[in-house]
Image 1: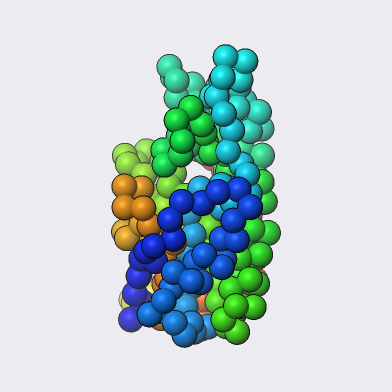
Image 2: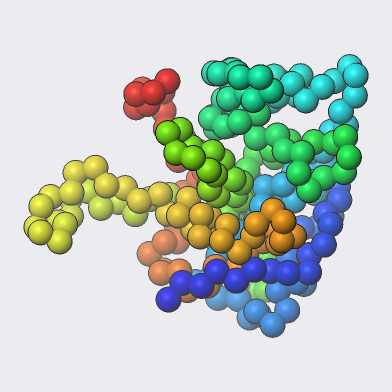
Length: 231
């Protein structure tokens, strides 16, 4: 059975904080860790620890930061901008967020999410002696679907897909296209216990199958323009 357990008591994160150590200390009664565990960490606290917080002022508005953080602008309606970030993500306002931060400040996405996830993973391993995967997640909207869901922006220690191509379905038909995005599904489950109004910025996912472990990267989940029929 896979369980999603909120990690409480981490508190506010500031630039320079050792996020891995704070998460490890907050685990408390959830220790010891297992290699079948996984940590899901909100991208916002990673960004704050890395100093990716900017002040808004007359000379640098939110829109200017969106333009700076975007590779290209796809659509715009009033203050809502859909853009492609330099990571390759298609999302609202280049992933910039104004919630859970000080007045007149915004939080940008971390620059290298896979490296950030790997760094947290290695730090947790040094602290606990256990190598458990780490996902950095954020809530994104989805084309043609209302509402938002958590997705994996960067990760370390996980396979990107459960590839079912070449296998048989329940009725014996050959599966030709099915690849399950494992990190996205884990991140979405973690969101059930880490809402923005709860103050929970990290989740321990316990009981993952050993087959989920691997060396995938968040960039694996970005669909290439050649395969994307909607760009």
